[in-house]
Length: 378
Image 1 (spheres, rainbow, N blue to C red):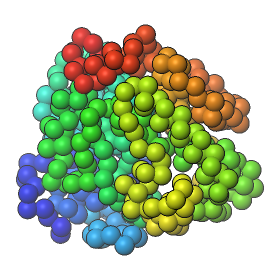
Image 2 (tube, rainbow, N blue to C red):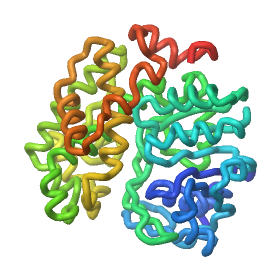
Image 3 (cartoon, rainbow, N blue to C red):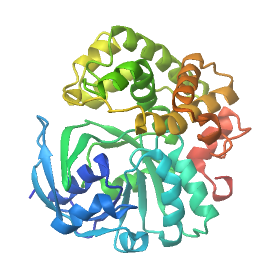
């Protein structure tokens, strides 16, 4: 067992969500010597884990990640039971599930809880904090978000997960920013890959999922429907022309960062920092990313790459950019195409500056809000 000698024996994790990321995280934490509770909203996904009492973790990467049977201390669909013995709450669900979990967790959160959204997508920590307060949470747990999920992974079989790669570094920030150090301290023994960043603006705007998910889905829509996803999503789906379109879209994201007074990495730079994948352009960097090998495309367009990343990544960025006078023709085009293809009005269901509590604020006011975060301002 890969027990970290610096780990605190009292560190107990609750992983909320039994999808690809949640299964991989629960198993990995267990094999690192931590007590893990696995929560899921429905029984169907976790019943095989409950029956076995464990998750089989397969290391499909070239990294030093322990494989084997990972014992899970508790498996439950009851939120109160899931949180009662936890110190760190790792929320690993699509971002459209954040609001539901915030509402359910609100009555049970304690001052000594650390809640981390893995990842927050765009504005996740803001939304989570607002909802727990609206539902009567009077305690002061740490609320933080990561820029991206630390794993490239798949839940391959019932009670089985596979890790294709772990990112080298994943920025993490708390809301307000002065609590980031506390959040990192809570997980340092488990994840040295988490690194501090100055605020949730950087984790939220560093969200490159809006490029690699909905935009790639739109540009491969015919192929996905014709082949039911029978091609490598990143390595075949991101061709030179697709990559050039993604780079144009990425410039809008970087421009939004400048409008907020922060510099954020381009998608090509992010590929190098996260995966050591370098290239003269985004296409080359993607092709050199070993962690993307073998990841197949979704079998249909009805997938979280659209259902999550349009309303929870694209729409809030466009909304914030509009408020700050930043033009986003590429982002807007992708959002409109997804809405048309899926027959959904993501403009009315997605996160906006209004739902995130940022409406009417200037760039300076937004920065002050996320850094200082006086209770009455959030």
